[in-house]
Amino acid sequence: MFAHGCFWHGHKGCGYFRIPKTRTEFWTEKIAANARRDEMAIQALHALKWRIAVVWECALRQAPEQTLAELAGFIRSDRSYIEIRELK
Ligand SMILES: [Zn+2]
Image: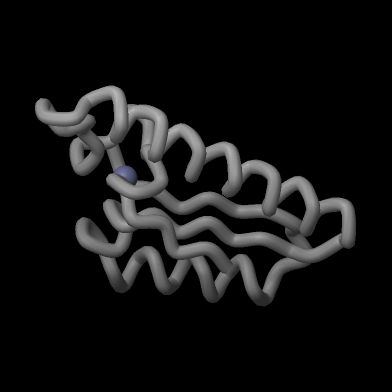
């Protein structure tokens, strides 16, 4: 299970993710590298047939009980992947 902070992991389209106005180039590259590393880790775990849950900070902030219920549902299921993010 990955618990991603929306800023550090560059959650696209999320209200908690915004590149800082100072040192913009540094932060853009840093966060893009984090996102690439996340993607590589997920692909590697998929290749090993691991089940993967990605839980975003925004989901936990917005609806912690629903997020945990979704995660519990995933754990009991036979699904191989879930990504839980804020509701729109
Ligand atoms: Zn988010």
